[in-house]
Image (cartoon, rainbow, N blue to C red):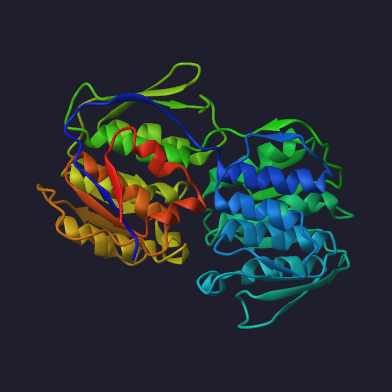
Length: 411
């Protein structure tokens, strides 16, 4: 088992962090640009393995598209290959083949895609055979499972002969990711009509335009640096996070608001955001429906700073790279903190422990966000992270950037 040792930080820090590009923006831009038949007009694409996998598979003529463990890549490419009539077998890691995709496949079939499962119904692997438009331009899709299904359908909607009216049923989770998709579609020349009161999105048949598009830095990746400032024992510690926009498309930019409760002030300076320490609150309640990828970051900070935390909107964490709720419960217990379900699939309560002293290593569960969420504990204690290479999924240079503040030793 590979491990990385993080030595406790005893000094203040003040440095710049050149954040990676947004994986979410990059993956959408790649699909939309491919539908626009654009070439060499995208810049600042993410170095994340998920994005590199997307680029590789878009350029490949192979009959098998192996997305590895990239859920977004699986969902977006399934829709893309379907609408473009490509014959592909979509597959991935064993965990990827345990992650549901049935809602998306049902939607694509309703539009005219011929798709067969080659294993268990509702899950990869699956075979894309052909696409013949069904004539149906009104589609209903659940909003409470994964916004990626909705984004995947929306991005191909302009290519449908009659366009599409998409009706979202039930509660809508991760709405900012859908809004990101719509804004990127508009950046490539497609007009969209939204009626959020009636939960419908209308897209007329039209063509994308290949335009120059630069991807913003990643707010999900920025969250771990907020944790570093929050957990520093030195009031003068600060960081400058480069490449972030003041008015971001990314829903995870809400970390600026969350972290004001946890002891971090954010100020935009034209190049990005400067983070400084401020007093933290003693308790926080937050709905993570629109920003589930921030839950691990916030849980660790709250546990370490002895802040009581009530979480809602984290049901989707159970079907991510791992069951993130279980993973958090297990690893937070090593800090003496408890994450308990107090209302079935609705509300969780984190009860912190006043002391932070890790005697066990942090298991990462093949999940990049587990590694990065727990790494900032090095501001308070020595930390051992198992399987540190998992960060390549979204932030390959994370440990290199962390070495600006923390002394690292790999084993």
